[in-house]
Image (cartoon, rainbow, N blue to C red; front, side):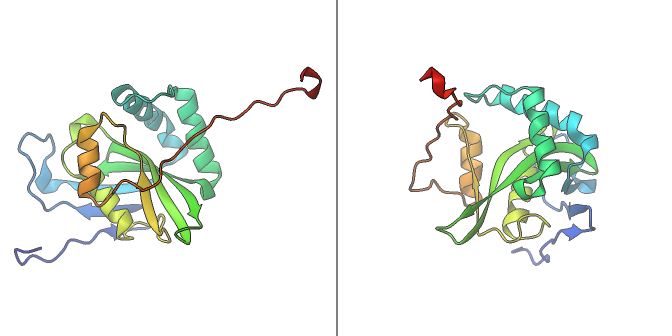
Length: 196
């Protein structure tokens, strides 16, 4: 820091990445910042109900062309729990209280020569917004302070065009639009050859 104070480094205790907050925040924020501590930990099955509720809340606030249901959210969490190679559901906490979540997934890039960590979703509960929690998580991932995706060669995320505030945040954190456009096609259902 430019004021002579040493940089704050997070601690990983084997379960959580902890980061003491020593910044000045907007007085309107609902946190007691002097005693606040950001942390992130891998989600467990016990977190699934709370995570499903937050996932549905994200899609209600920032709609997607694909509807979100608690069942679809639960399938995602179960897949991440059972198949660690797919990614990680992460619980974000402020002073050990759940404050949000992130879904981190992985894709190998031949072009970049390694795995890309895709921040598939990141959500912070309204009471904890504008305190820097999402920025902290992204910075922690990019600086390899977390136990997740330390081998990543890049980080990617999507933002809906109408979410200007999130777009500005992500640009401030170093994200830029890729030169290529991502295209998506749905799966073609298998048909009985006799029907053709």
